[in-house]
Amino acid sequence: MAHILIVDDDKAIRQTLKVYFQQHGFKVSSAGTAEEGAALAFASNIDAIVSDIRLPGKDGLWLLREIKQHRPQCPVIMITAFHDLEMTVVAMQGGATDYVPKPIDLDELDAAVKRAVSRKSGTAGAALALGPQEASHSKIVGQSFAMKEVFKSIALVAQSRVTVMILGESGTGKELVARAVHDASNERQSPYIAVNCAALVENLLESELFGHERGAFTGAVSAHKGKIEQAGEGTLFLDEIAELSPAMQGKLLRILEEREYSPVGSTQIKKSKARFVAATNVKLEDRVASGGFREDLYYRLNVAVIHLPPLRERRNDIPLLVEFLLKKANRDLQRSIRRVSGEAMTCLQAYSWPGNVRQLENVLLKAIVMERSDTLTTDHLHPEIVCHSRGVVEPPQGTSGASGEAFVSLRILERDYIVRVLNSTRWHKGKACQILGISRPRLERRIREFDLTAPDDSEKD
Image 1 (cartoon, one colour):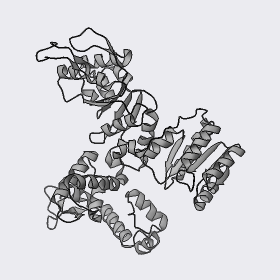
Image 2: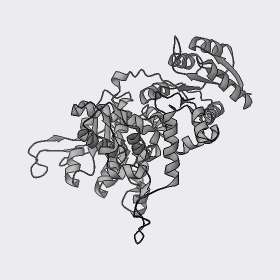
Image 3: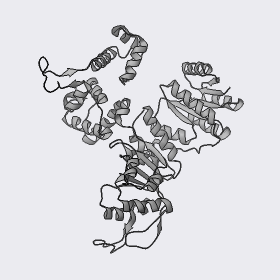
Image 4: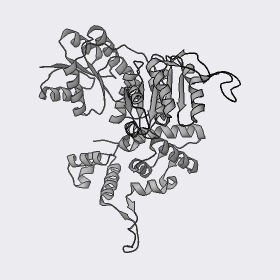
């Protein structure tokens, strides 16, 4: 029987997790402080530890360091309500086996514990003190499960010099992730250089990457140091990698395989120590199959892969993104938008966002410029976004209905009514169930199905 240790200052959480894991066949001990947890871990044969990060006195990161120093074989899973990229990087690079945010999904935590117990790695992670002041990647916003996985991937791949491929639709923030990988690495003091492979014609891109000698071509009046050399031992980010010509693909392959290249117009062989991070919004497998992309280069790039989810698959992150983008826009435009109306937020969360976060930012900027009050409303959102959220569709051509009016789906009517009731009760679920005439489990299912999020000042009962 595997023995796990729960460390959390919330007695109710400790008891809930203890009962849950005992029912699933584990022996369970618990502690309310990091010091007590460390004492139990050193005195008992613990197979895995589940610890909150925020604890009174010494925190969970202190406990993590103690465990990794004295019991490196013991896996540690961190849980916290403060689930952001910086904390994930610190925890994962400090040696945590996994990272689970609050409110805790018991199925997710159960799977993490079972994975930890089954593999029980003997490799101790190297602690990394990464303060918020060092982290420019704080612009990556998200608390959804999909983004938590992205944060963990960033923390893990940053620990080595492995080539990284970032996949995601246009506007999902691939360059932000590339920068985050650099900033979380041991080479974060070295240069970070970004190149858009689709922005330059082939001969200019070759010169931009590899550099050139004086007189190498018309207009080359002096020698030029390329981006690869400028990157040094830092990071070279190649955006839109799928747009490279076949000739450039071959030259990039040589760098990745041999770490060698020659400037344009030179026979000198130079060495590169840079880490390469590539990104694309297309399926490279399809390009390989059609002959548009070299298969050997594809495998060289496809070593460590980070998938960025589209915004429509992480709608719960939209309020956080809106808050972040509003603060940024207020600062840049010298405006003072303080809040977003409930209807406007509902519209923003319901829209499918084909342009992802970049489109969301553009929509907010336009609305902020036009808004004269301190509250962002639907008045200045694009009509398509407002109509989409209300489920409004035009009558089919050839039919006018009774008066040619637009229609709303029953599903949207149900969603909007549930939102109205929840807001009117300040998200007191007991009161909402009484008004709606449904059971608590059914309300919970509808909240998950409609991807609804309670405001910070709600009663949440």
